[in-house]
Length: 212
Image (cartoon, rainbow, N blue to C red; front, side, top):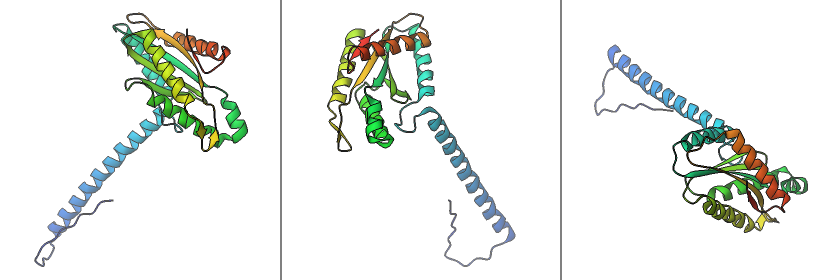
């Protein structure tokens, strides 16, 4: 909404030209407001298209775009990258025991923990269900950096004892695939290797990570 107000200390008689000028000003204001609303609407649509509605994290579409971009950069990069594939351990039990509303709350908290325990340049995304990914790039010491980040994530998840007053044991199985600098990488291959590593971690007892 917009308001155009003209004030004077003298009584005036409006001419036809004055009224036309006022109408023109009102039309300009209206056009400006419409343009701003259009820009905001487009920005909102773009945000919704690239973010998960529940957690606010980038979604599969945005993740795939980021992965493709980073892989192209790796051809000339001096440092490695890593793809982490995460699956919440025993998530089905939370839904079956306490309902989907509680399960959604667990997903939100899980997403926040991931985002709060990686570096600012890293990208956390929710693919679907209880599957999340993290893209680590500009790794200075690849294996040790990955070990530190994964251990930090598992410790942060393990520190959560209750969700909405309900006791929980929150953990994840994490599969890791490294993308070496100056190598030709294929997105589907990295995803498959990280996914396979995640299942290795789950088979080994959950609540751990495996570097594939």
